[in-house]
Image (cartoon, rainbow, N blue to C red; front, side, top):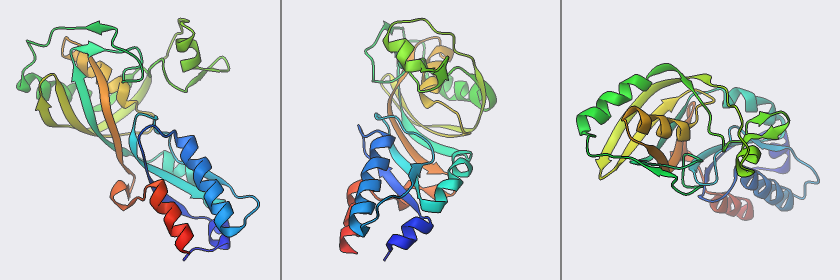
Amino acid sequence: MMTAEDFKDGQVLLIDKPLTWTSFQVVNKLRWEIRHAHNIKKIKVGHAGTLDPLASGLLVICTGKMTKQINTFQAQIKEYTGTIVLGSTTPSYDLETDIDATYPTDHITEALIHETTKSFLGDIEQYPPVFSAIKKDGKRLYEFARAGEEVEVKPRTINISEFEITRIGENEVDFRVVCSKGTYIRSLAHDFGKALNSGGHLSVLRRTKIGDFDVANALTPENFIKTLVSE
């Protein structure tokens, strides 16, 4: 049973972020619940790596003195699973925006899909999506994108150590990826479609691991709050 002092001294909480929640909302909710349950006036709470609202899965939440370890956790390799829809693209590279173009898929075979994954292994150059929270000239990229303004995005070097196709359906593929910090899976989906001489966008994303932390050991915010109440 954790006490107020435990949370202040520092805890690492594994949370399974639900769909539609922002990572910021999870942090705010847990901070409020911890303060309320233990009558704490002020406590630091932060997360080690943002998940988009349309993604679910592992958030590593740090409290108290453990917030100093956030950068260490953020730097660790991550594992994701998800689904790429082939034959169409969206400006955000996922379902946040509507389809803006469609492409042929008749030429795409299972063999071509598996072969194409190999070109994404190792160190690769990746352009982050324009609909992202990266800052340029003091503004978030998505602010430029939503205003319809053109903005130059610079590529970054990322590393993909594993890219496995786990299911092939009609114009969609399920995957598992192990990658470095700074990898945008939305960009991977977009680039994968392009590499198949078609188009692609992300329809499902779930983060399953950060370093040695596994979503199998995580609690939903609701279930974490129940542990506070039971204390």
